[in-house]
Image 1 (tube, rainbow, N blue to C red):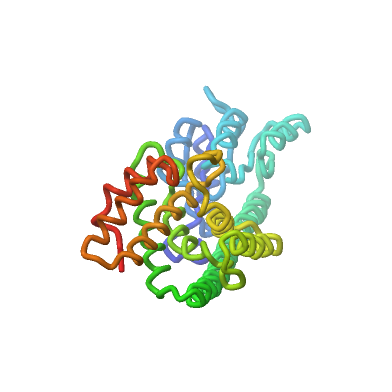
Image 2: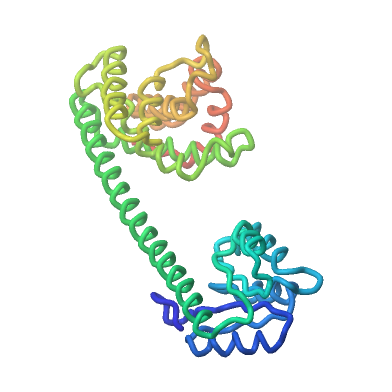
Length: 335
């Protein structure tokens, strides 16, 4: 039988019994049902077959030499790879105690020997129907998860675009050129990428962090859309982002934006250094550098702006970040 949804995958049934005639009969029944039988005469051989081909169902005898069916079932249920494969015991040990033991070990069903072909057929078909239903449900859940993820990403991107548009309006209100936010975003990203190569920050800065900070950094002065003064525009920006966080699910992006707005003017000296989030420390340097280069239109604009950043090392800025910022100066974007 071909597995629904994939024309190249067939349903396999592992048959484990040390009596060859039982294996042959059960294999013939499986073939008649359209399944591919995987015969094994011992637990060791069964485990070897599983490594080669993962079955969708296991028919397992209890009384076998060396490792019996109960022990093999325990091994299978402890392994994450085989844990969910339904096991059906087929055994002459038909007491209530034997059946309960098999079910307690995680077996899906128990067939008594000598078995009837009709009974085996019906019970195997029932188990396979359950397998197919479960696989279809898993496929549906994956599709649903993908759709929800894409929809969430679309909403997040739209939200970011709206906030960035508001940030551009805020800068325009203050007479700041459009390149201002682009340069801050780009230089924040470059600095974050460079910090990722440092053993100090490699665990703190992920690829997601780098992607987020390029956009989040552009929202540092979002509050200027309503208030121009430094103190008030920070409070206004914080209020806006906190309000958004209170009305939606937690967002790593929005949390970063909040950190940047709140701390992008915080001085390194005289502040609890652990209190200033890394994203805000990065944006503080990128923002001030952009301001310095915009104010200095001379041929030495880059060198003079870097001198100002270096002069603030340890007082205004995190000295470790300044050291790396100076090293990557050729990669920085200026007006």
